[in-house]
Image (cartoon, rainbow, N blue to C red; front, side):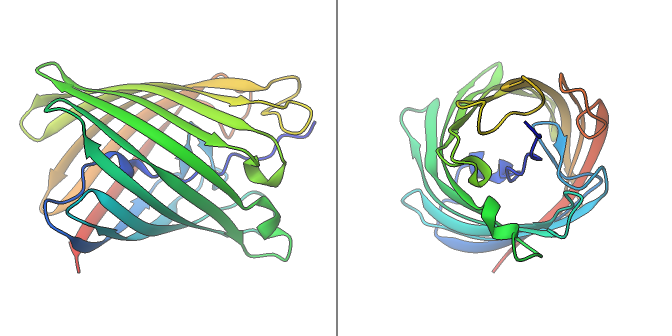
Length: 233
């Protein structure tokens, strides 16, 4: 079947613990390429992204996030919403779980790709860094009525104060290849990523090298630069 572009939002900020006190915040991000799981959502072009978030002191949070997209048609905007709960199970182990809704705009048919997704992300902190085991499940992926699961292993290490390396590997799996496949006869693929993260003068920087085993110019090896700034409201 024809492959539909991957349009999962890059919600990496959901894996962070909410603030110690309830607060509103907004984050503005510029990226050299909007990718998720190594697949470009902008035909290898840059994107401007923004979010508005509310984090309560009991761990609950809610927010919305948007980015320009380009799938080679008239769809030009992804606008998402999410609600979740962050819980510290022990001094070292935490879980972040919730529900996200992805919507697409720009053409009369764009909304046909809207869908819900549930997620559960586990993090374990030790002297060796932070290890993550993350899962996402959609029961109507991109409006195709196909089940879809993403599983990720990741580890972050602060190599020096203020400088972090994060390595991750994830697999995206269609549960119904007759309704959705990533490429001909391919119900799943792997994605590898190594990122350097730091902050300076109130800005957050990330430079990531990533690749997939999909045979496509929009999912091959690349470097992605992201610069963001968060403001309290």
